[in-house]
Amino acid sequence: MKKKFFLAFLFITSVICMQAQTSGKEDAWLGELKGGIRIQKTQKLYWENGFALDFSSPKIVDSRIHIGLSYVTSRLGSAMGTNAIKQDNYLLSMGYYFRPQKSLQPFTQLNMGYFHADYESAIFDVLPNDAFLFSIDAGLSYEFQIPFTLNLSMGYNLNTGNGSDGPGTLYPVFYQMSIYYTLFKKN
Amino acid sequence: MKTKNIFFRLLVIFLLFLSSCSKSPDIDNETMLDGDKIFDPSLYNPAKYLVSVAIDDPTTIQQNTPVIITVHGYSASTFEWDEFRTYTNANSDILISQVLLGGHGRTYEEFKNSTWEDWQEPIMTEYNALRNLGYTNISFAGSSTACPLVMDLIKKGEIGDNDMKHIFLIDPIVIPSEKLLTLIGLVGPMMGYLETDNTPGEEGYWYHFRPQETLKQLMDLIDKVRKDLQKGYNLPAGTHMKVYKSINDSSADPVSAVLIYKGLKNSDGSNIEVEMIDSEIHVVTRLEGRDNITQQDRDTQIHVFDDMLKILKQ
Image 1: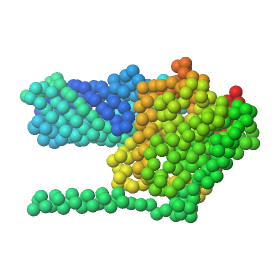
Image 2: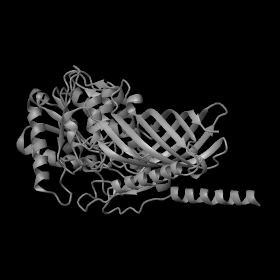
Image 3: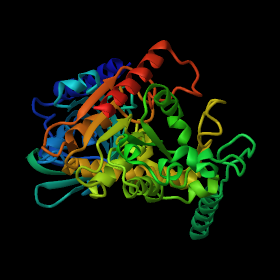
């Protein structure tokens, strides 16, 4: 079931990208590429921080669809110098941005990826520590006059640990703040 | 006109919210612990449950006999440790104090109005009473929520060096299996309470209705203990700890054992003992009242009892 979701997501993403690449002028699909940092707090659990990339194109639904890649980890958050569990989240996102030409853009995203927790002792090898990530989030994006963008969102993990299946530190509700620097923008 | 509409909608939402907050459960006084007829037996016969009440002037031999304080989990009662008492009485001469958590074993309203600090209080009361009576070999065994309660006592320094010999944690909860519990502060007031699916054998020993206020207290307690473990702390000198954790547990996520192992060390900085158990039961030491018990469950229970008694006799 999880595999099907992931494959469907990859297929949709690929079709959109291919459509963008094959239509119009050779470089017409190039839109905007942003890179930055992400700060994530899970409700009643860890701070997990890391990096994020965001791409949009005028050829992909008039810059309303954004494709993102991100990595957040407790290694750069709660687990720094503490006993918190070291855990990593790798995500591929597809977001829909409303009001693409405005500074303030509400958005909603579908995220899929991979979660891994490191329990650091063989005693706990019997416990699940990997999971397929599937989450949704929604929030606001603000593009400043200078080449920076601030994204704030709240999300929900649809696949969490439940005591028998899935890592126990994969919690449902999370809050994110991403600060992007515009690496490339086609005018 | 528009403003009026918005106010009207807000009023309807507010009234719906209020009506959902005022929910009170339909308690059957004849069968449920929540009612005003069934109380935990330790409340009207404390001498049968508490060593400090049963023996008010212990002999030197009694003072040096191992005495273990057993404590049940959230929404349960002293019944949770009855099987251990029966087994121990038949197999050793260890004394057992079965402590009832504060706010528990009484009416739904008393449970609803209790805090996790209230739950913790009787543990210290019995521990201090035993020490004042001269007992020298005191240990502790807790199941589920009793574990974060005693871990908090250790963190606060309430248990001194060489004052407690062994601590056994059975299916401790630091991370809940039901992750929506993390939203209890938000959705709790709308729910009012949660209804459980107790078996007929459990009704009368476990609350049938769990007030959202107590679930919030539970979440506050485990959140505090998780943060303490994250910073890390040590056991008092002379105290040994062993954790027994079921690997499939619908109440206390097994990852709780990982957090305890990483965050709580022996006084010399070495690792505590942890045994992961192949079981689907929350609190593997209590089988009475459950449906569909297997031979493996019975073997696991006896294994844990024997292991605890062997350690206590060392």
